[in-house]
Image 1 (cartoon, rainbow, N blue to C red):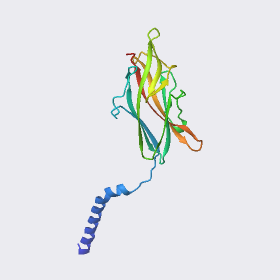
Image 2 (image 1 turned 135 degrees about the horizontal axis):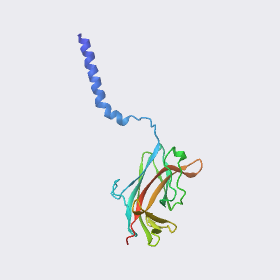
Image 3 (image 1 turned 180 degrees about the vertical axis):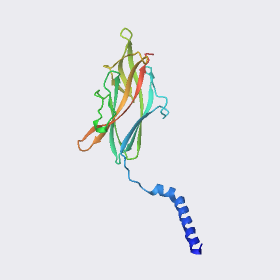
Image 4 (image 1 turned 120 degrees about the vertical axis):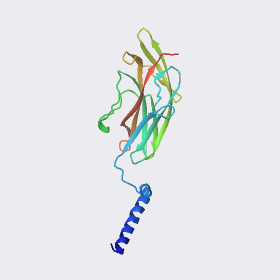
Length: 205
């Protein structure tokens, strides 16, 4: 092998090693085009974990969760969250199919929260809630009277829970529907996402 061949081999090895060393740096400074644009929505427990969610609800007792919104839309987005509650027979929102075809629950919102979230940022909303309700022993049902959410009392006098024989509980779901502001229509539109917690009213004092 000639001297020039050794030189070429040497510089080839040096070049490869230099690229390997510099690759972490390039991965930080290179900007790749984004191909997916979406919003994330989740609930965490009081310890910021997806583990110990409240389920057995004692009337008058406070419970804390965290609602998270992650903006991956490519622009600063204006969101609204509608807080709703339903029993097992009331209409639920849809979460399947294209986002534009998904529908929110037809139930009225109990409480609205609106906020701007910058692109690639996460908003975490602490939510503390408690329920007041009574137990109708003759009809074997729970009648809800109010929900206290972040210090605001909300009327729930038209909501009742029947006994679920399969789950052995008086179950209802507290859920959060996500809406996105549309500048063209100057209004919020359901963003096709919701999260919720099934709760059992334990009828304890």
